[in-house]
Image (cartoon, rainbow, N blue to C red):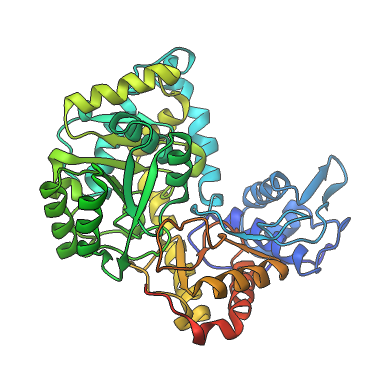
Amino acid sequence: MESWKPKIEKGPAPLYERIADAIQHDIHAERLAPGTRLPAHRDLAHALSIGTGTVTKAYGEAERRGLLSSQVGRGSFVTAAKHEPGQTAAGPVDLAYNFPPVGLTSRYLAEAMGRLWRRQDFAATSRYTAPEGLDSARAAALRWIRERHALDVASTAHLIQTNGGQHGLSLVLQALCRSGDTVLCEAATFHGLKLVARAGNLKLEGIALDSEGLVPEALEKAAASTGSKVLYLVPTLQNPTACTMTAGRRREIAAIARRHQLFIIEDDAYRAIAGAGSPAALADLAPERTFYIASVSKSISPGLRLAFVLAPDLFWRERILNNIVAAGYAPPAQNALIFAQWVEDGIVDTLLGQVLAEMQWRTAMALRILGKAASAPGADQTLHLWLPLGSLQSERAYGRALRSGIQVTPPDAPLVGQGIHGLRVCLGSVADRSVLQRALEAVLRSLGEELPGSSAIV
C-alpha cells in the first residue's frame, strides 16, 4: 500500500512512537490488513515531510510491538492480526493494571542502557551491592524525593533501595509485625497489601473512607478495639478511589497515631503523578513514626521495579536491612543505575513531564466520557478512576464489561472493610488513545441501569 499515510495524533510522545501508534490503530481499524506492504522509508518520510530516520525508528518500534515484519530488499509488511492494542489475541482490553503508559519510556530506556557501561559505577552490575543499595541510586532518589515528593530527607543514609513499592511494603511489615498481628488500612486499599498480609499471616482491619480520606473517628475506634500498632495508607490519589487526603485530615490522622502509638506506613506511590500542590506528607507531620515509601514504578516505569523506603530512625533502618540480607543480600544494580542516569542528565524530568501531560489528557477524556459515574480524582491527572457502585451492581457491571471485551479491576480485589464498593478503571495500560476511548465508552455502557441505584459512599 504505497499510498497509505498515517494520521498522527498530537501528544507528548516522540514522533516515531506516535507514527507506530498510528500503524497500530490502522491495523485495528482494518485499514491495514495482514500482509500489506507499507511505503518505503524514504517515500513515507517525503509524504509526511519528516526525516527518513524518524520513519526508520517508527517502523522499528512497530516491529518491536509485533505489528510489522521487515524483509531485506522487499520492505516492511503488516504481520499483526486484528486485535485491540493492550489486548492479546485471546484476551480483553486491559483497564485493570495500574501503571503509566510504558511506550513513553522505551526510547530513553534503550539509550540509557547503551550508556551504562561508561559509568564509573558500572562494575556494580556484576557484583553484590550494599544491602541499602547503590550510593548513586540513593543520591538520585534523594533529589527525586525532595523535588517530586516535596519531602525534606536529611541524607542518602536515610534511604533504602527496594525492588518496587510492594517489596518495600513487605520489608516494613516484616520489621514491624509478627504472625497474627492486625494491620489497619483503608476499607478499599492496594491489592498488594492483601497479598503481603496473606503471605505473612497478618490480619487486615479496614477503616471507613470519605471524600477527605480516612475517617478519624473510625480510625480511633479501630485502634482502640484491635490494639494494632500499624496503619497502612495511600494518602495521595488513593488506590483505588483516587481521592487525596486533605491537609486537615492528615493532621488528625497524625494526632491519632501519636495517641495510640501507631506506626504509619505511608505509601506515596502517586505523589509525583499528583504534582505540585498536594498536602504535606504524613512523614513530615509525624516523622518519628512514619515509614515512607516512594515508588518509581507508578510515575516513570513499572519495569524498573524500583522504590525507596525512608525509616523513622536508625533502629528500624537496621531491622529492614537485616531482612534484605536474609532474603537476598542486596538489591540488583542495573535498573537503579538507569534511574540514577536519568536523574543526573535530566531525562527523568522530561519523562515525568510527558507522563503528566499524557495522563492529564487521558483523565480529562475519561471524565468527559464517564461523567457523574466517576468520583472526582484528587488531581488533574491520575492513573486510575473510581466508579462508586453498590456491591451487587459492581459485580454485574464488571461482568458486562468483561463480556464486551474490557477488563477492569475485579470489584473485590481492593476491598478489606464494609460500606464501600465500586470499580477501579486504569487509564495508563492501553497504548492507543482511541482504543482507550472506545474501552471507556464500553465501560459506561456496562454500568447501564446500575448508576441510579448506587449506594457507594465515596
